[in-house]
Image 1: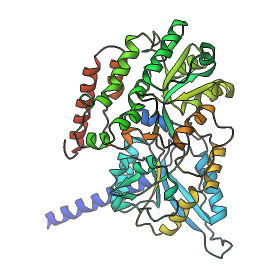
Image 2: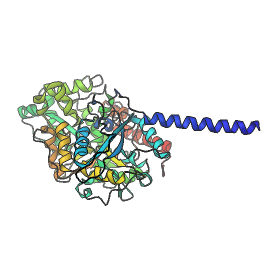
Image 3: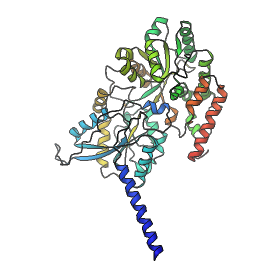
Image 4: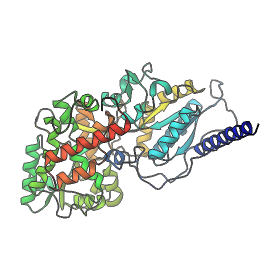
Length: 474
């Protein structure tokens, strides 16, 4: 009898703990001061690609306790959205407020932490069937870990899918099914440069890596820093490696697939290995600023603005920081070009894909969610969003036009999107990335290890992570 009572008490305690946990999950509305995007806890360039200034306003909560009637006489529907508390919400708020007026669909926003903590909350709620109607989550391989086929509504039958850029589709497609819509525009990885300095030195935009190195030689001869390093923020060391992926894909179209299956490595794939050789060349030719290990991101941007440094391998979202700290005129003097490869006739850009909205398959409001999605990717909604937050890269949706006052560096990217010369960063289309990538890149750029040693260390780091994740083939 006592044993039976003990078992009953244990069961009751377990149920109580589970209910408490679910209650805690549902109340994640506290603001966070971190600037990491909704990605993994590793502070990589992927995190920084989504790093927009945090909105200090309360999230839009447009739920109305009184059912209103639209022009057609239908009742207002309220859908729920779970998203990271680190994401900027200004543009989203503008769109969902307009959506409520136009469609009579209100959006109730619930916040969760970013990073691994927020991912665990989302996974738990999916597991126990307590999901919100909509989630804002990473595009790419991390989305695949949520078992999209089981949990989310596929969108192949929706009328707007053909408007999506192929590079974006690639990051939200699993087993031939598309599961997400883009939440904002892109970022690109490449080279920011000081336009006035380029004009003064008579430099042209390089179409090959050799041409870029020739420009750097001229800049060095003029007494300026040719390539700015800011390794006090270690994630910034990765851009030469990560931005080179367009060139890798151009030479080895199936590299990502083979890399994910443990069939291709950086150290034994010539097209991929070139990135480590490029980093070593920058060091060996003395193109970096002397204090690259102590220089911060903000100091690097100031060097670029002042013309003390002429090139900065970086993401285009940092143009926003330049305007914030140095003014619009300074931001307009910064140009952008992709990291060039060896073929002057095939220059393209590596892009960082925006997070995606995904829709819970078992939602009782799934019809409203599909209308929500179609509205969100309409030209009107995209342009409204852009009127609130200046884009840091072209859209992955064909149709909407960039604002006239977009940064010149962003206009520099348009030609590559229009020509289809884009590729998503490798970390969006594979399951693994070396956790110690920033430190390995610092070793390569600082001449601490050879390109061969760094590439092998990168591959070994990837293998360790893959085994920890229990990935097939590793």
